[in-house]
Every structure is written in structure tokens, then in C-alpha cells.
Amino acid sequence: MIVMMKAHKAVLSLFQQEKLEAESVLCYLDSFSDELYVPIRVDVPMKHSIYNIVKSRGKTYLIFNTLFNSMIALSKSEYEQYETLEFSELDLVGAMVDNGFIIPCSVYEYEYYMYYKEILSSKWNNHSHYTIVPTTKCNARCIYCYEDGVIQQNMTEEIADAIADVIIRTNKEFDITWFGGEPLIKVDLIDQISQKLCLADVVYSSGIITNGSLLTEDMIVNKFPLWNIKWVQITIDGLEQEYLRRKCYCCDTSGLFENLLKNIEILLRNEIHVSIRLNIDKNNMDECVNVAEYLYNRFGEFSYLNVYPAFIAGNKDSVSDENERILCSCRIYDLFPPNENVMTEIPKVNSCYLQQKNAFVIDYDGSILCCERDIGRRNTRICSIYDICSFEDITKPCSTIPDTRLQCKNCAYFPRCLGGCSAENSSLCKYDSCFMEKYKIEYLINRIMKF
Image 1: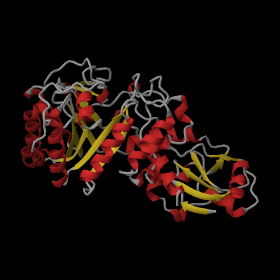
Image 2 (image 1 turned 90 degrees about the vertical axis):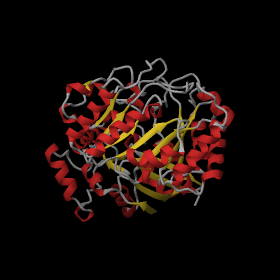
Image 3 (image 1 turned 90 degrees about the horizontal axis):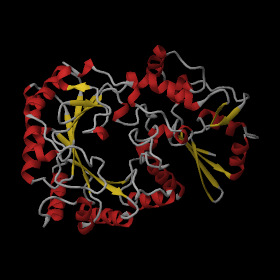
Image 4 (image 1 turned 30 degrees about the horizontal axis):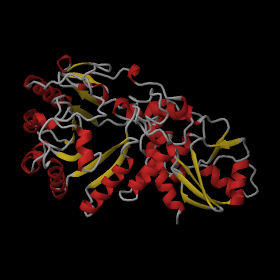
């Protein structure tokens, strides 16, 4: 038996006692230290944690618990004791209990987790996030775009001014994501809002989600500092021919792909974090691996580059076979390994911005929405930017957050993704809403097993 990662004792202790009153939870966590942890009795009825992931190689078994961040390596005989809950070694049962691999039968983990999540989500994440949509127009017609059919409109200067005014009056720490459409179609509006925030001495950072086709060196060097751009996300779904086929640009595409790559290098040389998202369906899995290999060979020296897989959800070409997803992800992670903090972070209290109380989407017409997937549709509309003085004036209605899917409640990865994308979790495809944390953890555990 080797305890490779000890449990987060503050979290574990919450699950080894009666639920604390809401007002006591933050005080308890703030004052807790591992020295205060008191091991519970091991002579009460026990059960396996539903958040254990078990892997084996030969006669060695590895168990990782996604709720308590604990990991243990067992021999075959030790694993048999764990499996049957019939322990002949006191040290083994003690390690199992003190790291959350087995818990009292009286504790219902999902129920406890959701109880504490609700308390902590209202207290944590006080940092605000604004996704601003200066336009829903786009110079591409991506074959998988979920904004297909959305009206193509630009934000007005008047609305842009109103957004900046409300952000300034809110007077909270925040960051911005510029989104679209293709946000770089309306550089003037990004300038306008950024300049107004700058004149008000507001401190913030921002990032931009763009197809990258409109990037220029002048923009990166001269405008990005004004916009406080710290990161850029660009989607590349194939090498040049496949990339252009999928993007369906409404412009001359000669030299576009190579120009995009040159601008990615300029971003990296200016120490801006670049995330390349590989949108994968069953028709381009191998192609996306080829893209990752190409980017690794061309830009592998830059620490500011991250390339990651993302499986397209909810259409006939979605990859529904779980083994195919794992294999494809692993081939990309071999080149660009996921950050190991995915195995050490405290459990999530929000799955995405839809569930985060201080995260809002401001659409091109000034509509304040709960989710970026709702741009141009208004299903999660709260009000207009003109209806409020400050973002403190509004709260997100609980009705916008869907119930947890049944298959997610008992999934071992649940504390790492909280059911995945809230906008997609009503999909009929079993895996559509899963976040990539699942595949990152699979990859990291399998890598540990090889040593």
C-alpha cells in the first residue's frame, strides 16, 4: 500500500459528519487545518465512495478519488480487501477511511456535495465575468456552429457605452471575454469599451475567442495592450485544406491559413496565452491529431501555447463511442499534456459560467443573458443593459440551471465537471455534455500507471 496523494482533509471531514449549518461552513473551512482532522471510527458500516476511479496494471491497482483528491496504490490482496470491505490489515482500512476511498454508509455523497455546493457557490466566485458580444456577424460559416440561424447584427455605439458605464458602476473585480460572431469584425467597439474602462482607471484582464482570420501584427502589438488581452482562443479543425472546408469563409482564402499561423507565432512571442481548440467529430479525428503534431513541431518551444481536443456535441457526426474519444484525446495529450492541477483542485461549485452567479453575457442588442450558447435566442434573458444601474442589481434565476442528469449523479468524474455543459446536458447523446476533465484525468492516471 502506497498513499500517493493524501485527501483534502477539510473537504473529507465535511463528508464524515452531520451536515453543518450554512452559516458555519465558511468559518469551518477557513479555520480548518490538517492537524485538526480527527479520524472517524472504522467499526461503523462502510461503503465505497462513488467517486473512486479504479485502474489496474498487472497486480497493481490504483484508486483515485475525484472528490477528495486522494490516490492510493494497492497490491492484489489489498485490493481484494478493499473490494469486499473485509479488511485484515488495520493500517489499510485506516488509510482507506482517512483518504475517503470508503465512507460511512450513512453518508450520501451526491446529496452532501450538492448541499455544500449551493452554500459555497453563493459565497465564492465573487469575481465577476462578462462575455461581451460586439457583433453576431461572422466571416466564416463553420459547419458545426451552434449560432447557425442567429440574426447577424452589430452592437451600436450607444449600447457599447451603456455596457461600459454599468461595468464601471458595478465596482467589482472582473474580467472580460470578447465573443461573437467574430468579435474582430467590430474592433472599433472593442476599442470604445476598452478606452472607457481605461479612462475610469478600471483594472481588469480580458481574452478573446476568435477564428483568428482577422488578426494582424499591428492589432496584436498596438491594440491588444489597450484591450488587456491575456489569452486568445482559436479553433483549428484540420490542416489547410480541411480547415478551409470546415470554416467556409466568406472571403478570399488564399494565404489565410499560413497568415493565421504567422499571427499565432506573433501572439506567442508577445507572451499572450494561445489556446488552440480542436473541434472533433467522427470525420476529422485523425486530421486533428495531425494538426496537433504540426503545431507541436512548429510552436513546441513556446510555453504560452496549449492545444486541446473538444468533441462537437449534438449532431449526427458527433463521436459517441467512448473508447474512440479516449484514444483520440490521448494522442493529442501525448503532445500537449493536460495540467496536473485537474487532479488537485478542490471540487467544483460551478460547472460553467451559466451556473456562476456573477457571470453574464451581454448580447449585441444589450440583452443580458445567462449563457453564451443563448446568443441571439434570448431563452436565458434576464433584462436589458438599460434596465440596471449595476450588475449587482440582478441575479440569475434558478430556472436557467437544468437538473443533473441521472447518469451524472453517480459518475466518478462528477466532482470535476458537475455534469458538464449545462446547455447540452439535455442532449440525447450520452456523452455530449461531458467536459474534457474526464479525459484529462483518464490520461494522467494512465500515465502514472506506466511508471
